[in-house]
Length: 69
Length: 258
Image (cartoon, rainbow over the protein chains, first blue to last red):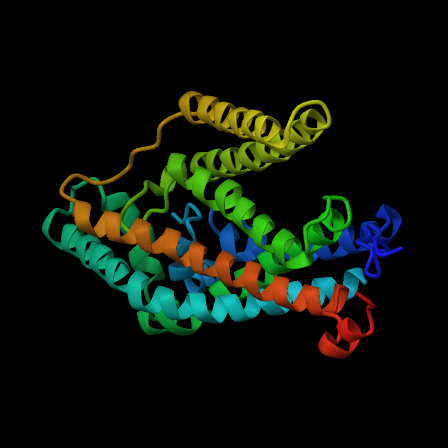
């Protein structure tokens, strides 16, 4: 019995999709919205009138590689 | 569980964003300043030049947010928000992949996932549509350029997901190396075709410094490299402590009979 493995290598149980889905939908939406405001608002499309958001994140948007203007 | 992972991903993203801001400040701002100086020079000395229509928009806006704010607080907020957002999205993908991907430890999955994200989400789209400093780019084509950029991004990420799926289904029939290489080849082939087929965008003004353009683009890639390296390593550390805390060393080992 010297071959008994005392620390068996068990695979971790995957997180069920049903548990993932609400997080993926709501978290994903909000995070994508954040990316949109940094990356594209008041550039190609505009939800808010004016250019304040565009100008505020101007340098970051250029450096992050989004088409800026 | 998912919420705790999401929180850790966003935390790693914020820390990565702070470091990336430092990097952007040191390596990204000088080429931006050069590009803006070029833009102003062209506007003053060649009012009829090609950059003129770009300037029209820019001069109206220039007082809206000062350069100091753009290069300071604005850059800071943009990079940290971006870091938090990609960190969170990355954590959600991790939550799906964990447990569905063989025997890899959480840290190994986190590192591989960050590397895959950097290549497919940043590097490959940037090869086709690289970052452009101010003064490069015609504002009239912003809609087309944005659409093309996001198209390239979506193709690249979708191609990677497809390639991983392909490699996994082949791995059951062939050895791991062959399956991995076929998957990698499929990814390269798909993005290669996309890069070849999608239209070329070249709006670099004549006489724009090649050195400034190069430095800017390298700084942009460097910024993303800093972000993804820190996100991958820090999140891996946090996730492993949460999911698979290391066994309590000596006492545990001593209890195992030899």
